[in-house]
Length: 302
Image: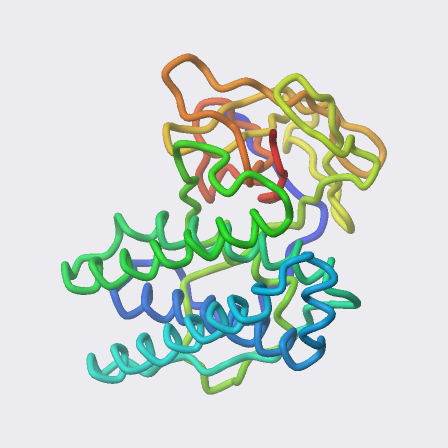
């Protein structure tokens, strides 16, 4: 297995970072609370910035504003629930951070909301296997199903399929934090440290086709970093994450990133569809935190 390096490290100083080791249920609940704080602040920010008429005009749905307030209330309830659960367990809960969501208009808000809700689903799904307490697992599952309904509703408001795949995609702690980190400006120094890190950023090129599907040639950008194999000659791969395992395709270096063709999932595997995630790696057999060089990037696959 070839090693891969990025010429510049990702910034990891947004959260207090702890060396990876045994991850406890308290760590997982605080990780979930970190995400819920972000979503809670995101919706409160949007509701404070835009008027009901703005949402109605953007969605052509007079019910959207009321439903959005329900989503915002759900996220606030999740924050309160997780905070109380951690306090009861004798674990200090993380406090809300400072964020920058860059929301110039409702259209941008809707696109960001869809990504955040999808990531939330993938975060809870990916963390489920590491939760030891059955009570916490059930509670996390009950939040996961609500986040999934949020995601479906926002996708439908964007005129996207509310259920584009028969399977959702699990993401691990570092993959999720990599996607959340760009929104986080700073966090209280008193917050307990979490065993997470951010990988270098990987994004979809703005020049990619508006509609992406299996067989589409696309470019992924690695802003501010140069990803290359450690030996200078090994192949770089793009790995599309699915619940049945990653699907690999060759990634060819181009200016600012890599060019690749979106693969089709093998027969019997989960399809690559809807909100999908891809990382760069020098390994074409597995995806781990040790083999990931950059990403995930978020792609909408039809």
